[in-house]
Amino acid sequence: MSNPKIPRWAWAITGSGHYIKETFSLVRDLPDLDLFLSKAAAEVLRMYKQELNLPKTCRVFQDKTASAAPIGQFYYGVYHTVVVAPATSNAVAKFVYGVSDDLVSNVFAHGGKTRVPIIVFACDTAPELLTEAPKGMVKVYPRPIDLENRDKLGRFEGVTAVDSPSELAEALARRRADLAL
Image 1 (spheres, rainbow, N blue to C red):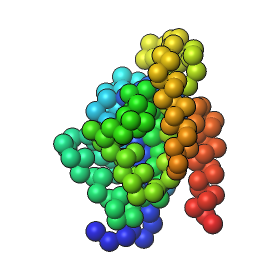
Image 2 (spheres, rainbow, N blue to C red; image 1 turned 90 degrees about the vertical axis):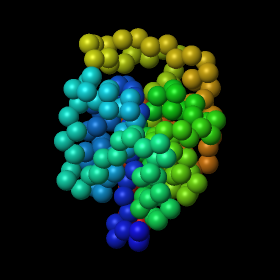
Image 3 (cartoon, rainbow, N blue to C red; image 1 turned 180 degrees about the horizontal axis):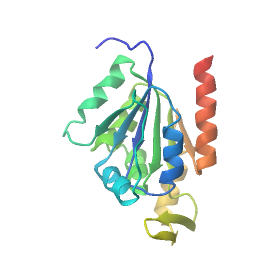
């Protein structure tokens, strides 16, 4: 595989419904995008009745291979940025402890191994959160370990960890500006 003329965004979605609608409004605005869906993400999108409505240039990869085969593209310069949003506490824990056993954790790991800048919107960011479930708003109380892992992730070199849709939008805008230079 040769270097693409235009490197792409790699956006991974985990099995969280936390701000999924707001996240997808940002996904749809990005050109040259590859979407990586965990098995749980595919389920959550159906539960939240979230239509993809993606640009025609978007490629979608689902977690269906044992070796996370699409990850090899990182080694050919296909991606300029990795975004994981929304990211469950399970995904964040895998990132922090170096576990790469599914498509999303491999996107994060190989993005880091190839020094591609990474933006992560973690779901569990405060002791008490209000989030939208398929049947309405619910309170969520992240565990101390979830909050600790979010803090650890924020200290990773090459990773920008954000805590809200507005921070995610700002991080994307900064990255787009960096790419325009």
